[in-house]
Image (tube, rainbow, N blue to C red; front, side, top):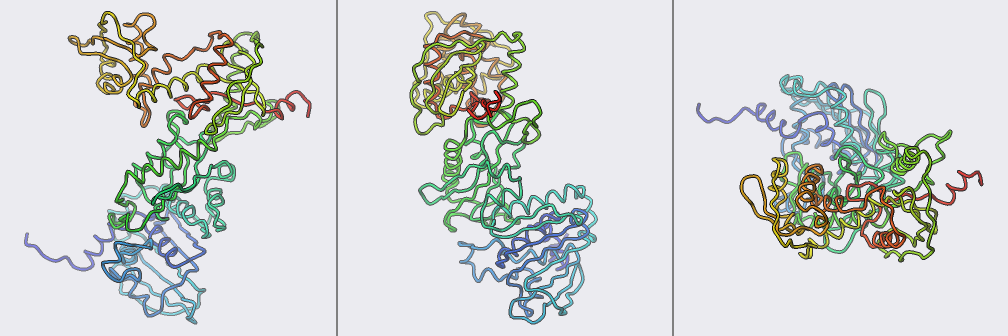
Length: 579
């Protein structure tokens, strides 16, 4: 077949396919244009997921009547003058492809009036339909309506999802830009029902409240910029508020909503050891850096960007979120809950909150033993004062409850500390630190021990061989399916080494591949931590509390479970009828 130039209408449809994938693509492009036009109010209305109709209205600067037809020509833009502008793009839109691409896949009516015009210019056009210009009365700003999307492209329409799925995609666009531009009032109506309304105060917390609700917004922790060219700010939810999916991490680069797996992973990394496996954070983070250090012209829909120094951006984002969590994440507080009798149980994301789960765990332990759990009260010396970087106050150890929990008194109430979870946290941070300093706590064996491995254990060994050696397991292959062990981490040295190594490898297998966490250190900590049911001497209890105070993140074990709960003085007074 000879090479030939495609007819303009065919080329336009192909180009439209790069920009307009679904109704949400149109909403994104039009909303970005409204923001670039200086709008303080943006209203979006859709029907049937946006397939039947989409209307985006704003109170921006509008389009001059003489330019409205030109705006629908390919590569027409008011945002670039020359190629040198591409190195420093200051607007969300700039390609000049959005409006002609939209007109290539649906019937369009654009009504726009700049402040100095007596009437609004109106243009109607669509696939293979020439533009028609007229005038009418309208408020200052622009309103663009798109109807009968993909009517001329049935194959494209066939691949759209259900109306509810397409509506959800549109809502995702709107919620992200509501959080990126909290000074703008955003409104979304789906089939005549309003589903989003931000108030445009300029306060990010207010915008988050419009998206996630007032309860989540009020609990969010503030991330503040640090030093350096990459400035990261925003809000991050405390670990007690989490979700089952990764879709709640919102990232903006110079206020442009982007999708970047590596940067989303940086946020997840900041929560390492604070969230339970399978739970994911809520975070709204804006990354600011010099415009010349980011290339936004690498993706047809501008959803992805390229950084001059992505590792630097990764590190700045991770540090900002982590510092916010360490500074603001509280110990779970039972004082947040009313007594179980006659009170509604607070839930987050459909699940009882963490502190209440722990309260139920205490009650379950009491029921299991027939209510015979006692509290041993000895000793009065306070534990060491926590360093300023942790959230633990000065604690006075009182005793042990049911050989499971440590009871301590703080200035704000009574603390119940899970001895196994607390010891896990202590050991985990010790193992991670010794690995980082290349000084593992290892014990050599007088006689090497041969250990036969199951297929699952061999898979773990292949996957984690470097980490195992970094934590002090000195081994070599020894025939088919076996290893010869010459040294082990100290937590595995007690008792039968052969059985201890095999059980430890099984524990690593049970942990599964946990992204962003040191599985080997987690398993070593779990294996070596004091068990529930073990009676501890008072000196052992004090020592454990002191070590917990010295941890970077003392409030959770490496798996994200809380190490303690707080029963405040107000809570106890209400429970005993003193208030």
